[in-house]
Amino acid sequence: MELDLLTLGLLALAALLAGFIDAIAGGGGLITVPALLATGMPPTMALATNKLQSCFGSFSASFYYLRRGLIDWRIMKWAVACTFVGSMLGTLLVQRIDASVLEKVLPFLLAAFALYFLFSPRVGDEDRQRRLGIIPFALVVGTGVGFYDGFFGPGTGSFFALGFIALAGYSMGRATAHTKLLNFTSNIASLLFFILGGQVVWVAGLTMAGGQFLGARLGSNMVVTRGSRIIRPMLVTVSLVMSARLLWQQYPQLFSWIS
Image 1: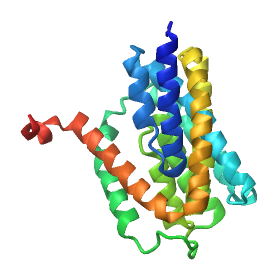
Image 2 (image 1 turned 180 degrees about the horizontal axis):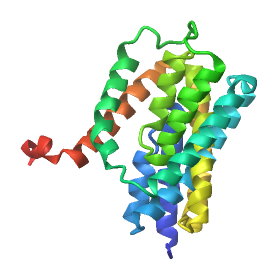
Image 3 (image 1 turned 120 degrees about the horizontal axis):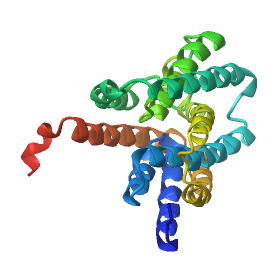
Image 4 (image 1 turned 45 degrees about the vertical axis):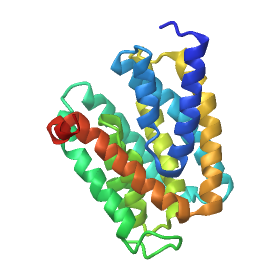
């Protein structure tokens, strides 16, 4: 595709905002995927290009959190390995079967996540007792959510955050930091197969990468300085917005009263 400089500039701005939001609560794809589709890109190319640019944002956030000591690599190496394999398998499978069933269920799952993040006493600035060991957690959350991200994708950050808070006992800050590392892992695994399929629009993806990188750095700094005061409301808001958007797409009759 040929894109003019104005379009590329607008895509970079969209990526900057998405990177900021994604580093805090996930859901940046709510901004970047529609922006890419608005250029006239086919859906598959838009998803592939979105994976490319989001890799830069998730890497930027992960590197920042790692330098700040919020990520324990010795523990996370198993989850990273399982997430990579899960995402790879999901990306392979989605090319063979229909993922529309997930589209029907996901809005309700995201709404439930929002309520959990809003009301659960386990969500806060302090670590709590771990409920799953390192390897079982890697197999359940890493493989499971990684597979989901490769297969479908929306709300992946919420799934990872829920796993770290509810099963690993992490504080919101640590959960957000580790979520970005696994997001980066699943993005890379999925991107490799999109590249092999020739679906990536490189000019758009690399232009947006700069915005993503900067936005993610700004959002990561906000997480470190403000903790759950900003993470909890952002997680709740992003989960509810994603839920409403998917409900609008899958159940338009529920919104018929608006018109």
